[in-house]
Image (cartoon, rainbow, N blue to C red; front, side, top):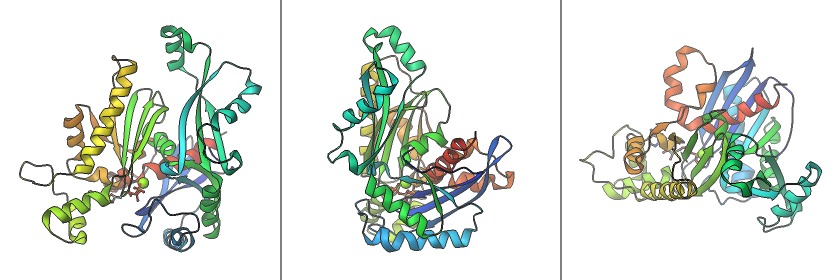
Length: 361
Ligand SMILES: Nc1ncnc2c1ncn2[C@@H]1O[C@H](COP(=O)(O)OP(=O)(O)OP(=O)(O)O)[C@@H](O)[C@H]1O
Ligand SMILES: [Mg+2]
């Protein structure tokens, strides 16, 4: 985790997306996390939550506090402990290898290595890192003797000023910043948890698509590309000569745009599929025998009718819509609601789970 710490039982996971805010409250009930409350609010359309907003933009100063305040007032969450995410494009996650060395030297070596990835001074960033242990390394040791003397580390870097900007907004609305994490890592938490397989998560939100390859719970490759639901709406509007508003309504109306009768082609979905294919090729180059268990779709755009089939056919890979609530208990009467919202809540649930997991002991 990048920062903050707090001991408690109830946690809010807050996902600040470019099109909406999503909040989940989980509590520890016995030894299981349980859903207490959830809410989401649209923060506007294209450009409002623009990914290029800097820390003193109108977004951080006015829009985000306004909507966060509103959703919190309306939803009556019990907890004030907030775990928040910074977008994947706002931070850097990378795997590095170091020669074997005594534990006390690792920190210094990681910092030195990190300077290669950071264009600014180390004072301007927050570093977080974790040694990757486990089976995969043990297996590789057998097959690749040269790996034997290496330590593998997951390095996470984020700008201090960005973290401060988020933290400030959280305080401003009366919450306690308990933890901050990059959204990709939160998503792995809720969609994969302790599953040992190999998965590719494809999170398609409104503006950005995050593609993450995870092996035995460890993030191996991550890419983000500028493609998302806003583009799809745009394509529909232009192809049919209708307004953006009408196109958005059509998009979410469960009409399938992938049927034979539909004349619409989505170049952005094609680009996403091509990027996944490139990642796959990289993975298979390392070891042609690798089998990927599933492609897990997430984000609001995962709700597009037929999108799972589109990727499954295109990539010839089992494709599912991820369910971040599968590791959480909830009232059975919520089942149908959960089914509708699940794709959009992967980050929020993952963040709240982080709260639960960090404070378990
Ligand atoms: N049923 C649906 N069919 C197709 N698209 C949908 C559906 N429901 C929501 N969407 C789209 O999902 C997008 C919002 O998804 P999400 O909440 O994951 O984005 P975000 O987190 O705000 O954005 P980003 O992650 O890009 O910053 C919107 O573009 C919306 O049009
Ligand atoms: Mg998002």
